[in-house]
Image (cartoon, rainbow, N blue to C red; front, side, top):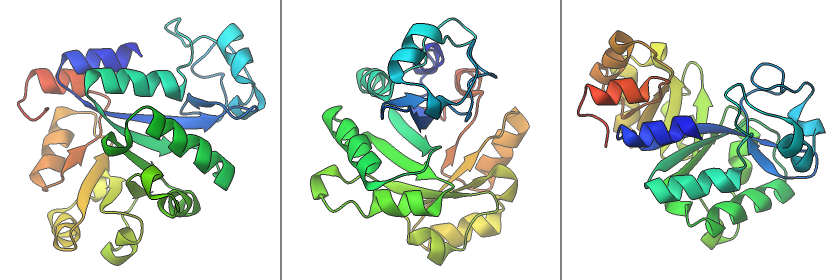
Length: 216
């Protein structure tokens, strides 16, 4: 959570993170399938209970692995908007758990759920209960055509190297916002913005925002 608080201090209030489920159905923030790269534990996130993760596993900076609930509470407190990437297969039961957690946190209007998995995005987007629905976005390395992107939401996510002026203009003409990931040099960030993208997802948000006026 330290990284998000540092981002908030530097006016970077659009937070991207990754979601996985534990073996007992709890939702935690973790990019990798396994624990070994970023924690003192080994094995699969999906094979651990939430209690096991909390008791035994620490991130490289000594923190516990954040739960989705604690993260959403922090985002709400800081006034942040969340880009939540699903790194796991989704079922109707998992959809219910996720969307009810988001609603309980009062974050339905401050979140965008996204995935490279078209079926996961479709499942979230097709939530039948109006009061639980959230915006969705399909991620694609090369960028889908505009018609395909519009099936999954009002935004499209692609790798920053694919964000040409022409492609961004095509998406905008279709009424889509354009998100790109993950330019991590200032020149690449500036190039993405010059192409006309709406949102840049970067690991350097705090440093970039300190020297620019683009962060809200």
